[in-house]
Image (cartoon, rainbow, N blue to C red; front, side, top):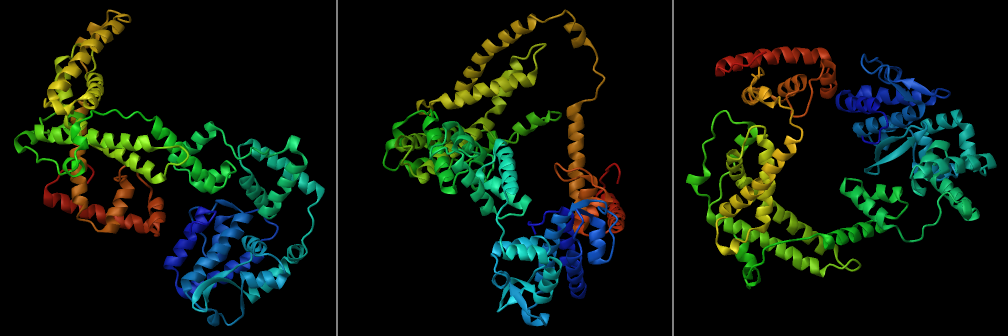
Length: 554
């Protein structure tokens, strides 16, 4: 049901398809068709009026929302199609002749697109089974009533009238405004055709004919087959952010194959320009290197890997203790694997050519670099505790501990990239010297910078009492309470858990919702939501008492 223009009418259709009995849906189809025939002359409708005319009841919520007449006509046609589709009836059960879109177009000597425009403007169509498969058809009685009401529009479609000079000037004027906003010919033609009631191809032909006759003042001047390097990179960046190829083709007035070609070319250019540094080794060139290097990693040393988490630590430091330390064989394995993956990526990089490189080679290189980065992240996480231990020894008054840790993390990442595992040294030795060398430069430099702005009152701030609570302790308490809540929620069924989660905003990134919002989400009334909430809270109290869990508010 994604083709609806109005969210409220879409929700109404979903509710009726799911919950309304078959006889009620049949009546609603007839009421919707009657409403479509009698909506001439109005520019917009209130959702409450539309809902009352179609279903017979007036909703309390969203009744005041105004919907344009064009959107109402379009969505009610979709409403009729969806309800008739849910009834799963055949053409024989309608007891009257039905016509397909193609048959209507042949009967009135118009195109199928013209019939589709009539449907969007109020010609109700149904989706029923014809010869064993679902098709969109128009009952003959519905078609006859629409023709009687819209005779002028039917006649205009049958005998296509030439575009007047004033209408052509209006199209050119509006197209120039849209083109200045960055829209291409295809998108401008589509928008103007929808706005002015003309076929998209008619508008496109009008604009092309104007540009051909007025090349010095063309709306869409010819740019040839070339597109600037800046626009090529812009297309690639937009695609990486989630813009689809068809949207890019419309926005830049290019075909989809051209956009795909641009994406592949820019990807190869960027991959060729990407610096890939690694520590080379003769192990990478032995005949069975792939199998040996990509074999399973050695097992963890349980004694060194399992660390007791000290109490009262900030959340960041607590997370570090959850990552086990690597022993020396594991370090050798992961450093060898990371550099081998980069070595393979460099070998593929040498074979890349902008004009004749295959997409498979580019995808393979990207996959290798991503895998190498994943191994690098694992090595980084496994050594973050080393940074913390060294940062503690360099902590001085006036120095922010977490800024010191952040600076040390950058040194750790650089050390991972430069460490030569083939020499047989343990990585912690190399990384410790790299981090301490960085602190030897950065800590005095930071003190020198701060001395320039020292006022003499810093000692007062250092010795003053901070009356605020311990933020880390409060965070631990909140985390414990949330874990307890989520534990007792396991005793609820799906509907009860959904109501409580929505009402109190227990889902990650969500906010508490009102009874009405939860009812709309679940397709029930707000009174029913309130009843479920009261019953569920009482149930939670019993579960909490049975498990001896103390949770405020329950």
